[in-house]
Structures are given as structure tokens and as C-alpha cells.
Length: 353
Image 1 (cartoon, rainbow, N blue to C red):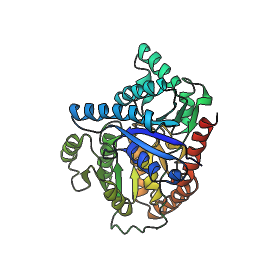
Image 2: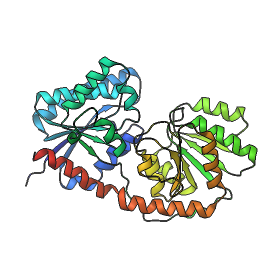
Image 3: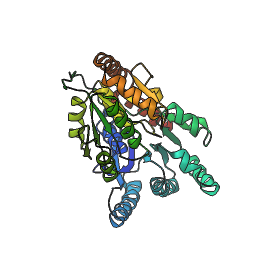
Image 4: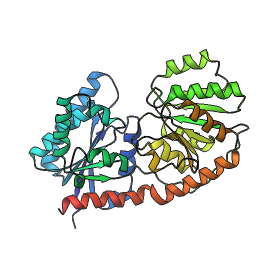
């Protein structure tokens, strides 16, 4: 029996970030046993010419695939701003060929983008309703998008990871916290630095790694200004192997974001048996229960963040217990192979509709 054909549209796998990780995880999963998958890359971080070039090549490849590959479904990974407008062009072209289209929305702040002005709001609503299905990352986002498109068009598909069976024992002389993400205000980097400064004043012992691109120089300047060089190490961007090594070493993950979908960094840290400190945004409260497998605070609540950090830094048994709970959560709810059955169900519901 011939496998259904899926054309996946998204960023280059050479690029950085959570969306790329999601695309890689899906591509390497058991979904390939049931579908023939072809991928077109529409974006890579670089100068304007590089970005225009890869997108123009993508349009030619799209037209070729529509005629030769003849996909049953076009699965488009999309965020806000430039990503939305690029993928809009892709969607409109594919609809000229009467193909089924899934928009898989990874945006952490699509609500801000959608509400920026009335004309844009109408245009975005029109485009989202042109899709046959929206895939969103959490129940919270499902509720949000149900105000824009019919609820029947929306499916929740959580991000997933390949579960790790090995257990890791941390043997740091003092606990190490990890920030993993783009450095800047949106991810709560400056709130974290403020809390670390308070912990130092209070004599709480611990250290931190900041891993990610973004506002690296501004962060280093603040570290120097507050004399935190002995506590905070800025690693810059790290690749997947380096992330794995860090998650084996550190004692917990802290990501005090102002908006999110469902961060891969949190799921990956849970997979390695780490407790989490994060915020009540996006799909995070669907994964982390406050005071159970981690701590959740309101975005910008530096006092709450300081207390949560102090709690984990001073209690090894608590860190271990929370980390064990997180491994179980990954096993039961976020194993990529199990989630691919959900994705297959979404595909089948469209094909046989």
C-alpha cells in the first residue's frame, strides 16, 4: 500500500532554536514508517541576501514538489512576524493546487502579533482560516486560537523528546543552575540576574550557566557591573551535544519567561531528571505543577524567583525528588514516539475527511 505523502515546510535544520529541534525530532521518529516525508527549508539565520535566497529557492522547490511529489498534506511550521508572512505565501500557493494544509504554530507571543492593529488582525484571521488544521502546543493556546478559527480546526500536539533511560547523579560541590534560551528580556534573563544578585547578598551558595545567543554583551556587562563573574558563566550558543553534556552536569533549569509556547528546553531538562523553575505562561503550567515537580512564578516576580532559586539551591533531596517526577512525566506524556501516533491521527483525519 502506498504511503501518504507529507511535504514539511520549515526552517533549515542548520539553524538554531526550538522549532528546528521539533522538526528534527519528528523527522527522525517512527512517523517515517507510515508516511513518505519530504522537507523544504524556507529560512536560515543570516544576512538579508541569504534569507531571500533560501526563500526564493524554497518557492521553486515548492512548485516542483506540488507537480512531482504531489503531497497529500503540506505541514507548515510557523511562528509570528516574518515567519507568518513567508508561510502565508506558501499556504496561498498550495491552496491554488487544492492541497490540504496544516499550520503548526510555534509562536510564543502570537497574541501580541495578532492584536498589533485591526487590519493585520483581519488578515491573520483570514489566513489562519484558510488552513485545514491548526496544530498548537498546549491547551492554553487551543483556547486562544478557538477565538480565531472554529475549534474543530484545532489540534493540540505537545512537543516531545526521545526519552533517556540512563539516570544521572550530580556530584557538584555546590549546585549549578542552567538558563537555556535566547538571552534577553522575553526569556527573563535580566530578572534572573537580579535574583542571583540577591542570592549573593544573602549568602546562598550556587552558580549558574547562561547558554544561548541573543543579548550576550548586555548580559556580560550586567554581570561585571554587579560583580557576579564568580557565580555566572555566559557560554553563548551551545549545540545539541553541548546541551546534553550541560543537562547531565547541572542541578536544575531556570527559565523565567514572559511568554512561551511549550519550550523544548524545559522538556529536555525534565528528560534528564532536572527540576524546573519557570513561569505561568503558555503551556508550561500544563507540564510543571508548582511545588511538585518544580516552581512556577508570575513573569517579572523577582522576589518569587529568588525564593524558588534559594529553595532548590539549598535542598538536594528536593532537587532529586522533583527530577524523578519529571522523568516520569516525560515517559508518560512527552515521549516523541507516542506523540507521533497523535500526529498520525491528525494526518489521517484530514486525508480521510
